[in-house]
Length: 119
Image 1 (cartoon, rainbow, N blue to C red):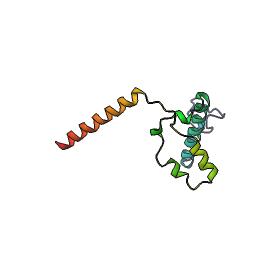
Image 2: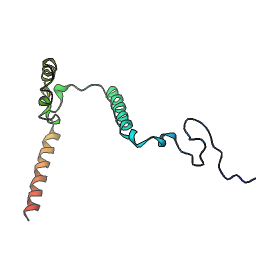
Image 3: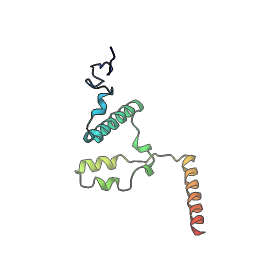
Image 4: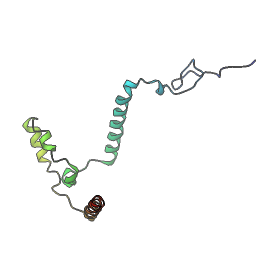
């Protein structure tokens, strides 16, 4: 006897009643794509942050924080604003040689772009 359709397995991963076997994950509506990706980004970020440990904001490079960071929270209650100001972001930051090399290479790149645009 000739079998036209392959045997269909019924379990959590595969769709039953179809000749095309695929994961049920691919049946998710497009409306859920952004919600699922945001959830995964949060979960992976939380796990990595938990494994690597917290970073001391006083030792953080202040160039990594937007200048408008405190202004963004200016309408929040005073205890929150005081807490954010108390973090003293970048107070104990020690500049490394790699930052100086980055700045000098950035300046060289800008000069070369100006020379190219001038010609």
